[in-house]
Image (cartoon, rainbow, N blue to C red; front, top):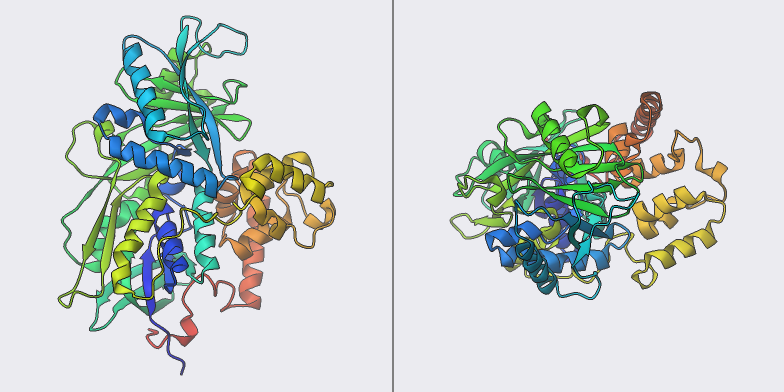
Length: 526
């Protein structure tokens, strides 16, 4: 019987932090397994405001260190994932009853100073002229404009998982960690395949709990270990409405409760509005937007925009649970958005466990690097930090120039419709070449399920990006579910289910062989 090798590291959680840690560790030469009980980016990491930003409002709480590190990461992510991270201008209409004019101007000056980059346009005060394309109320005559970045959050997670796979990591989706305990020389980790209900046991030298909103649940129910840290679950909801204006810029609206709400252009046809802030109790997987949140977001838009927004105009919505460090703050907006890396060792000062608390999308790479740096003393073979200067999969654009890349693609695939060329470029970057391998005309893409979602792309997502359901494809990997009718989505669902079943019949043990442990050679099989 073959003996299952011991993994250097098992990562629990397939959100942005878990995927980032797995990628960093695999790139340093560690043998890594990542297990996620659902799909990658299934929860908080696909329910964000889609922004890579420094957190302008954190300056109000004098959190200069967090803002500076986040702005540094903004620059790094723009350079390493230029197909996913897009600079965007943000307009802040001025209302004198909330924050003073000079208070905002000083904050934006500090924001530019802490960002210290020539890549992004600097902030300035502007006049809000009442032109026909200005969606704001005519009473709003001045404001500010500054730069941050927009990102496809779920695809950022997928890109990190792909990076981990490139360096030999195994990505196990729909695989839940049900128990983990220290033995004499290794962690013994019990896994459950959530699709087949099969149980497996694997070994590891180190364990990272990056379960996001479930981090304390893993500590209490899987590890059965004490912890000094707790998270506070804070619910944030967003709504999608038909686009409120034709400008490329986003708007930052100040509410009378001192919170801010973003209105962001989304998928060319919509405006994305959010977010709310409220304490949450219960299962993070069951979080949903409520009527009060919808009214809250509509009301603030109506205060600023010329045409009032009604809840009946909402075409979709989502909620996510942010796992924030519990600092007992009464003000939800003031809760620290940083992170805590908790290290636990056994009596022999070996077999490390790292619990990750908090964090934000923008600083995931830095968090991941620090987690792996913390593990390196236990792995003498580990290489040095590397992710700050290497492009994410698909991000190695010629001269890091998206427009030049788009021109190159259009020359190579002149038969590809322009809207599809743009979507492929923004979604897959240079991986578009891999997606279109063997394709010489539109007919080679196979059946079109609507809005340019062809069989070829679906197969690619199933075979290369761990997609196992229609929602994996429509909601997280492509976002085309926001554009499709119910009938179109049903046809995708039927085709995906049939294809997945066929793959399992043809290759029952290897369909997801790169995605989860090699169960057939595991000496600890239950």
